[in-house]
Image (cartoon, rainbow, N blue to C red):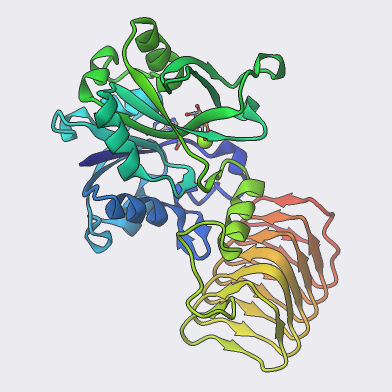
Length: 362
Ligand code: GDD
Ligand code: MG
């Protein structure tokens, strides 16, 4: 079966993390986000994937390549200007062989059972089947109403509070017949959610829901990105498990001083050094090549690659991207720090700060 992954968004709300790193390459427990998506599709026997890209394509191509090491083959379609969700899939039509296919938003991490969804789609002889998930606040999403037979009756993209009639939203995974693409103009900005689904419903096409309550998280904002890392370390998804029951994993050539206190859950990448009496509290991810100095405290934080946290620094509930230097005894709380940032020694960064790349603060 074929799939199209939409990886074109600008990731504006993920700034400053997304300035140099496309959303799909954000490291989730030290592995680029998109790798989880591709491996999951592969497990559900989807062996050809079109990556529909409109922005920062090269890092994705460099990492994924032809897909062989994930057990799939990959085709790339790159848009000159963004075509929107439906326009991007239309642009991939020639690679879909006229067969039922899967389309997915590329910014969602989920354990959704795609095989079961395909089976339901076929059983119902649906034109489109849309995965639904309950959320607390549907205003950020596409609200979807269904009848008692699971047939979709209404779409409402980004409803206002007064418009909320259900907590079920479009979970960003679709099974579709290729003739759906006939209603989409070529090389034109076009949205599934606003311009394709509602008119097809009006025409009475069979569009069904696949409701699920499995793990689901979109990485739209730094907070959600952080929560995803936490959730995986806490065993909320079946896509990450610690190999031993210590809930601490450490990569190749990494050294943790015997006096360091790591309670876990923690994942430490390759070639890391954790100094004397360093303390990790809560869920902590440390990217490859990073160093945590003596007596430093890292609590509930995600640190990317080649970050140096000097001795006595305190990092709490923060995300620190590649190649940063946090000076000794500095304090970083509730911060999001992009790449190549230096925080000088003894500096107390204002809580909740977001720091853009290539800055020196202090
Ligand atoms: N190739 C390409 N080209 N991809 C695009 C484009 C484009 O022009 N525009 C958006 N995408 C990709 C994004 O990268 C993302 O993976 C997906 O399409 C959805 O776009 P978002 O911009 O992230 O939409 P959203 O999060 O506001 O809403 C969508 O997702 C919700 C679930 O997270 C909608 O589908 C909602 O209905 C849904 O509830
Ligand atoms: Mg999104």
